[in-house]
Image 1 (cartoon, one colour):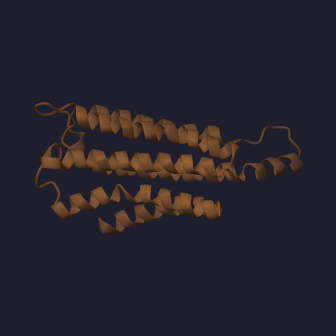
Image 2 (cartoon, rainbow, N blue to C red):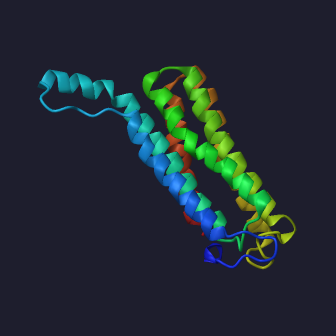
Image 3 (cartoon, rainbow, N blue to C red):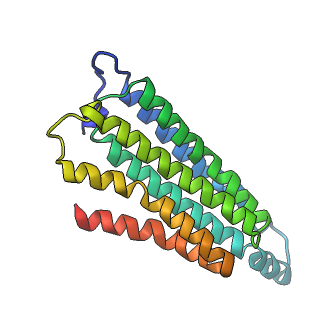
Length: 207
C-alpha cells in the first residue's frame, strides 16, 4: 500500500506517523461513544431493568449511528491514504482538522443521549459530520492538486474526481438528515444510519 511508505520526499513529512495518529484518534472516538450509553447495574429488579432498558433505547440508537459514521470515515480515510506517497505541512494541518471533527463526535452523541429529542443536538451532530467530510474533501483536493502527494498514474483522473465527490456525500447526507429531522425526528436517525451503510456498499460495488 502506497500510503504505508516511510520515506518522504523533499519537503514531505512521514505519512506513516500521521496514519498512526489517525488510527489512534478514530479508535479512541469509537471507545468514547460507550460513555454516551448506560448499562444495567447488578441487583436491580426486573421492573427496574425493563425501565432502564427502555430509557436507553435512544442513546443506544445514537451509539449505533455514531459508530457507523466514525467507522465509515475510518475505512474511507484509509482508502484515501492508500494513494498518498507522503504528507507535508499543509496536508497535515488539513488532516488534523479532520481529526478534530472525529474527536468531537462523541461529544455530539453525548448531547443526543442527554437530549434525544432535541433538534439543536441533531443539528450539532450533523454539523460535526459535515465538517469531517468537508475536511476530508479538502485534504484529498490538496493531495491531488498538481500531483502534490498522489503520483501521476496511481489512479485515473475520473477516479480522482469521483473520490473527491465521494468525500462530500456524507456531508450531504448529514444536511438532509437535519432537514428531515426538523419535520420528523426519527428520520434523522434513519438517514444517518442508511448513509454510511449505503455509501460503503456503493464503494464495494465500484471496486
